[in-house]
Image 1 (cartoon, rainbow, N blue to C red):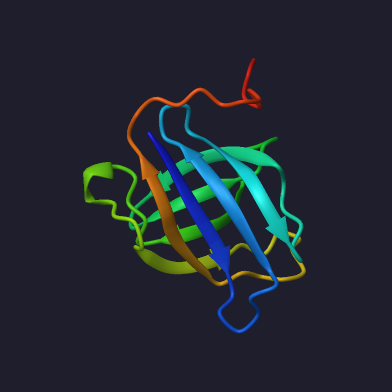
Image 2: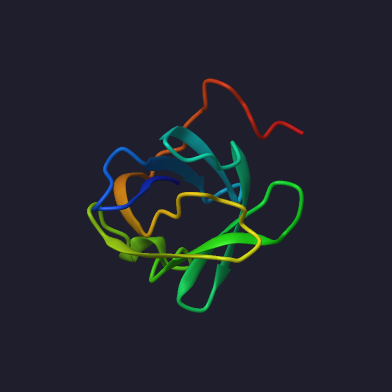
Length: 118
């Protein structure tokens, strides 16, 4: 399953990041961004009441997407939204504070560039 999430700030539409969440591999990748610099990919973890966007080199969370429950993907809907909570070590100048689901694709999708090949 692939979920496309946009992180943004309603008061600053020029700063955003679009992330692709791959639930099968428990990875995320940055599809596009503007005005904010975040890693190009990383690991996904779940926590009570949130999904954690983690650094690619460790399990340290960069941020939590509150109320995004990936444990039961049948409850996800396009347009769903919530808050982004950034962790202190996330070294990000512009903190995007909202997430929303742009697209949910339940079919298996072959990525054009396999960022996660091991």
